[in-house]
Image (cartoon, rainbow, N blue to C red; front, top):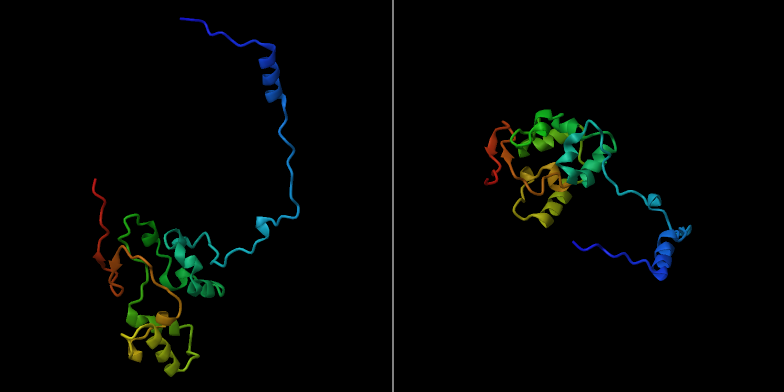
Length: 174
């Protein structure tokens, strides 16, 4: 084995000492630049330690429907129950504690919202702009117009009346 020859020239030593001895340049702070902390936060529903719904349903934190209700302390739990078993189910086969089939939505909303402040004709006209398939007032429910209170992508379906699992999530092949 050959011994390693170290470079011991005076020039090399001077450069090495200069590199290692040099202090970093002083930190320059631009006091005119705005602090990121000064920016107004995006409008979202505040997360409560008890409200674990947003762990999986995070898009609802920015949903106008959810934000409006949260401003008067109405949360997911108010309508859907704590749904502990649902939240703890990693297989996603346990339904929320309370679900509302389409025909029960208006009745549930009416528990807090005693009347609708828009004339029925305007409601129908607005709905016709959105979906020509549902022209009869009996086909409308509150969440058709108020908020987008539906999952964008649903990987599992339950019967909302009985809570019975209708289709199981596909398991990844091993």
